[in-house]
Image (cartoon, rainbow, N blue to C red; front, top):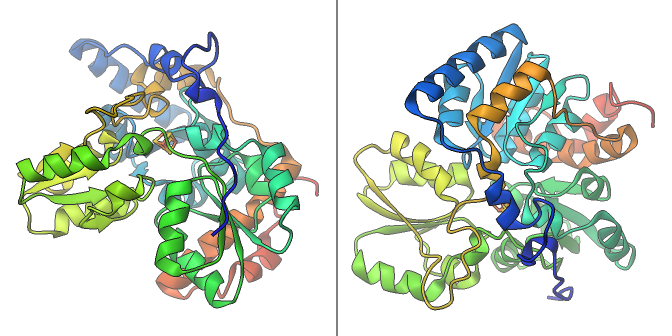
Length: 379
Ligand code: SF4
């Protein structure tokens, strides 16, 4: 397996004075927790505004529990990025409010170019997206023209525009298996841990970009071993963006949705969870009475820029959600040409997922022929 050299990205420079690509600045932008009275008033305002604006709230499992509850209660959805993309595309609402990070808003816009996409804070980003600038990625692809380009959902629209396939963590393994079976060599970006996990599972020839998620990258194998000794009956649930030393100790490795399902189905009563701790809200709802413990990010080797919670996901709050619904600010725009190109790899994944699930559409390429350019703007 070949690898690209490790690069330094913005979020690794805590001394930066401006910009939310610095985690310290992102934490400083996290809305203050409202009082119970303020919270009730904000939730009521949001419910009313969603109706008035014919909008629907689409939230990720990692955002604040109040936003997740509001999304479900008002007919929106709380899910992983694959389901968020599908739900937003298929919902009839004219406005989607995406509570998550920027690449999720961009994906929604690419799939639904005629809808208005709003986000509570447009500066909520992702270390994987930051660590894979479009121009450097294009040069990397140019240097390896024989490879099929597979990118993770956590990338900018411009990076997706250069890819053959987009994948999420819930379907990446299956898609790479499918490509490997066709004899394809793969260029993978940006998450090195997920790429390496999939490479080992499939045996595919994968050239890996060296990005990482700052939340998952901080989970510590040695400290996890110690925690397991304290909780010998606990099952360990791990997201594959985590380092190999953590994945190696997992009872279940999977996407956020797959980990929630595992917490529900396994008969253990205690779980150690190596993913963003925003997911615990949904896990507790799905498996009441069970105990969930954060996997360790602390210990001797700790850096703790996140402490198991994404600073950019944390920038989504009730206050800024109400404000964008009221004002219509923070709209996501994607250059139509980039959107048109990025659509191809996203639609290919959705078609693959649909085929696996229900045998509805024969392939992404067929979907491309039928509706690829509809409503996306000039080629
Ligand atoms: S949790 Fe990691 S992958 Fe998800 S948005 Fe935050 S930095 Fe990106």
